[in-house]
Length: 103
Length: 375
Ligand SMILES: Cc1cc2nc3c(=O)[nH]c(=O)nc-3n(C[C@H](O)[C@H](O)[C@H](O)COP(=O)(O)OP(=O)(O)OC[C@H]3O[C@@H](n4cnc5c(N)ncnc54)[C@H](O)[C@@H]3O)c2cc1C
Ligand code: FES
Image 1: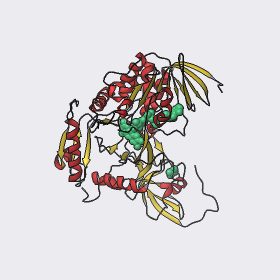
Image 2: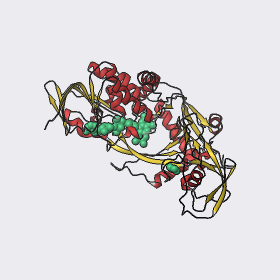
Image 3: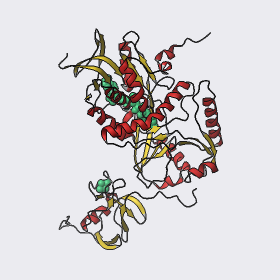
Image 4: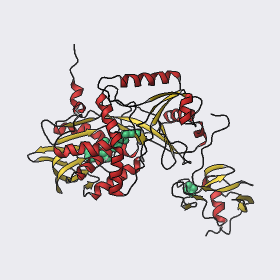
């Protein structure tokens, strides 16, 4: 659905999405890298389960939610892609989990 | 000034939770009703509240209020069922009982003393509650933190999805043919031979009867029909987290998980006039207390904070009144419009349709603010 501009440069940054190896570019946000890699669905809604993908790309719509390196519900459009990131589909609502020894 | 002239059996001023619930009840009685409401700039507690249907702790100083509140909580399932039948919308009513958690011995003592005073009042309505220590509380609420000293549990408490309730009431009144007129702020009310003339930039509306349900603006409007509503704003702030899988079945007094998964935290009550700013000092105290109650909240993202104005009478209790000098002019205002929605729709509105106030509500008139102090 999306193509990179021909003048886009930036060093390649490898990452995984749901275990699949992918490559983005330096300067990409997580959401931009996913869209450029042809991924248009990155989460399912917490209430209806409907599929969603990045939309506003500016932190407002929350449709770009993904799990990044184990942290759930991160807004992909606000997080810069880093080499080796393990990104996963955000499936519905995550569990609230206590920090070690907090209770 | 009148460019439009409308007529109706009953006019309701204000389309918030109170006005919409009363209009719904009147329409179900077969009355022709019109609701005049302000626009999107309006101060609307109804769009910003915490959504509790709450009984425990209500009515210290006025046992009639405890009884009225308890009756509304008991009538809530009937309201939810009627709304579902009329609109197909499920307002998410859940009444599993609710907890007030205490974070220190002093707080626990204070709450126990309040509860004791409340239930020892003469004529106090009888209902169950339990005082629980940390271990007993954690049996029912396994996620509590070690700072929770104890709690008060009342099986009558519950909550709804408040935004859905608001939308649902508006959809229901529309179905019954109630005329809803947004952007029609009422500026003046004039008693006339056959009722009342309401005027504003929209023109004029003549109504046989009138219900003032304009929230904070009741203070200005009430004297026009010889009623009195000395209500003032009381700010409340709310935090909402991202949606997470259900972990809290019970609502707390200051914390609850909504039917859609978000956690709402709301703890504050301030009196700062008509200011609706969200302030970090208050919000951070609320967040800290919430995390001490449920440590697993610490890792959740906050997605929104907001503040809104409660409609507060001098003693905190509702005001329901009919004008003695201009019969047919009614006033309804309260600071727990969610909890009391069932009574407003199913008890208050039918009484107003018949021309009076329901039994057991005589203590709620504004005359109570004029009891002469004994020398
Ligand atoms: C932070 C917060 C938390 C709360 N939590 C709870 C809770 O958990 N449980 C509970 O039961 N209650 C709660 N409440 C209270 C509840 O929201 C209110 O009691 C209820 O919304 C009041 O409804 P209302 O219709 O009287 O007022 P509002 O919602 O303020 O509505 C007043 C309406 O009147 C209209 N209006 C005003 N002036 C005019 C005019 N001149 N002409 C025409 N229309 C006019 C306005 O447009 C508005 O729509 C909370 C409130 C706040 C602020
Ligand atoms: S794409 Fe809208 S918040 Fe990220």
